[in-house]
Image 1 (cartoon, protein in one colour):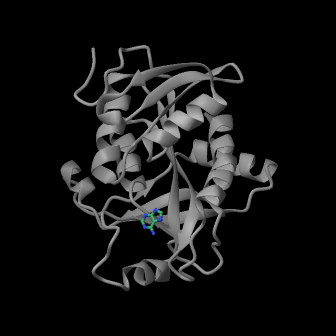
Image 2: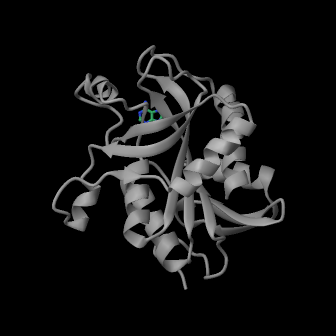
Image 3: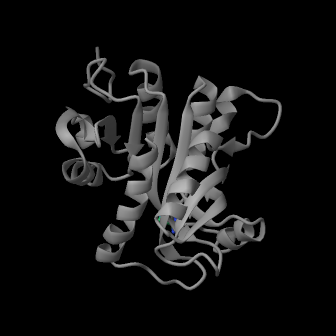
Length: 233
Ligand code: ADE
């Protein structure tokens, strides 16, 4: 049994999957944090691994960039591999002056400029939210780790290079904390399939100050976010 995008056999993937965007980050995290690691996917180099964290089975797999990509992988994980929860661990741009580089955003809700939810033929606009259970546990862990974190809404955009230079400011005026490109599709897919999802983000750049983190800084802050995700997995 496999899918067009995942060569894993049933039983090779844990009930909870952590998903960074970058498959090479999935490889690095699996090799550094998990014991007894086993690689289950290499189709399109979208690497996926299963191993143990403090005796608990966890999988880590890349999601790729954008809502179509995470939409495909999350759908297959939920429907073909009996995955119960997906925690996206990614980066974002800050839209608010008090959300600083390296801060963590625990995503409560996700807005979008995507048509992803049109497939559900709802008679209105779907509000995509994280699992409250996972959100609450992430907040507890962030407090324990003394992390600088924010909880709130983000904008999951289909566009990285916006023709409308003011789009970020417009979402910021509605209280969105950051911009990324995957959370809405992940939350909507989980809701449709009756599963759980959460998105944790570290701020890698600021649309307010135009600052950016270095690769080294990104790696260090990613560590705190990763540890929060592993604790709640
Ligand atoms: N991910 C990290 N920074 C981002 C940005 N500025 N826009 C969209 N996605 C991002």
